[in-house]
Image (cartoon, rainbow, N blue to C red; front, side):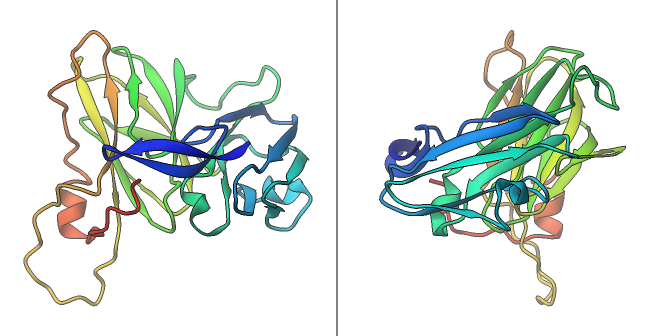
Length: 268
C-alpha cells in the first residue's frame, strides 16, 4: 500500500510517501521462473508511476516502461521472472516520490540451483541507507548493493575489507576483487565479503561523485563531514563504538576526483 507515513531522519520527523509504512520499502524475494503478482493500492494524494528494473522485468509488467497508479486507485502487476538472477529494485517514477517509494527485488536461482561462486553464509540487501549488519568472524556474506539515489553516481567502500564482485544488475559476472565500488544511478552490484579482520565495527561508506573535469586545478578541499551515507559491519560480541573508516572513498576518491554536493536536503 502506498501511503503517507511519519519518518524520522536527521533528528526530525517528516511525513513522506512510503510502501506499507516502510522506508525503504519491503524487499521482494523470488526465484527465477516464478510468476510474480503484486497488488498496489495507492492511498496517497499523488499519482505514482512505478517500475521494476532492469531490462526485462519492467517490460514484463505488460507495459513498455512504467505503470501509472492513480491516487486512490489500484493496479495489479503480474509477470514471470526469466533469464535474470541477482539483485534488482522497484521504485516510483513520479517526481520526488522515487526518493522514498522504493525497495529491493531479489531473484534467487531456480529450484535447487546454486550460485556459480562461493556459497555465502548469509545475504544482506543494502540500499545505501544507515544499516548495521551483524556478522561473524571468518564467514563470507553476500552483500547486495542498490544505488537508489536520484541520478547520482556513488563510490562505496568497506573499512579494511575487500569486495569480490559476482553480479551486476541481476546478471552474473566474472568475479573480481576491489576495495571500491562505483555504482551508477539505479545500478545494483552483488559482492562477497569475508570478515577476515579483527572483531570490531567497520563502516560501509558511500559518497556521491561529481566530476571536476574542466575545472581549474586548485588545492583539494578537506573532506566534508556530512553528506556521507554509511552502513556498518558489526561483530555482535563487540560494543558499537570506535568504528573503523575506509580510507577510500573518504580520503583518496574524495580528495582526488569528486566534489561532493553541499545539499543535505536529499537525505530526509
